[in-house]
Image 1 (cartoon, rainbow, N blue to C red):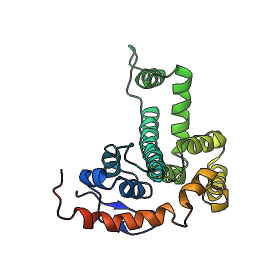
Image 2: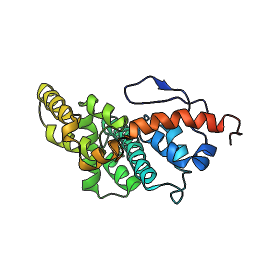
Image 3: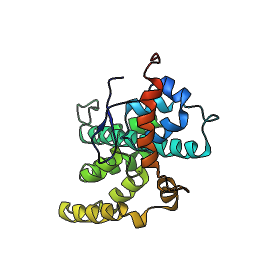
Image 4: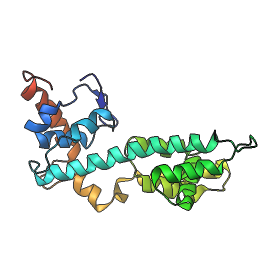
Length: 216
């Protein structure tokens, strides 16, 4: 596969597991997917993991990986919604641009109430002022819930104040002592092998196990 995946904070991890790897060494692939940057290469591999063949540890890794992919997709959705909110193309019979139709179309497309669609659009617009938040969301380092809460907290504030709040909140989010119990469990398993360490080991094992195997 030509796509490159990367460990957070490290150089590119040049090997991306194949679909065959997901069948042969599913736990290793799940550990790899839990720490590499989200993207299409990770999604396609995750989708073929057999949950029945994963160990308990592997299933937790797969959950972490899926959550990170959801965050990546959420960042893309926020960007699209912000573009729709800022550049409406629907015109009324009188030739006027009607932004309310954007809200109606979003509500219809996402099967939301108009109030919820309006809220989604407002959050997406606000996130354009919080680029660091969107960047972390895209990398799967925070959840869409965190991004939305921060956007709602800065609505109506001037840019300098919004940026100061964003910086302070994200700094706390990235502090290890404030990680959730689930995150600590994933990152530090009994036996001393954290998910990041296991993923690096997996990335080394996978190529040697499949170097001579055909790629689907």
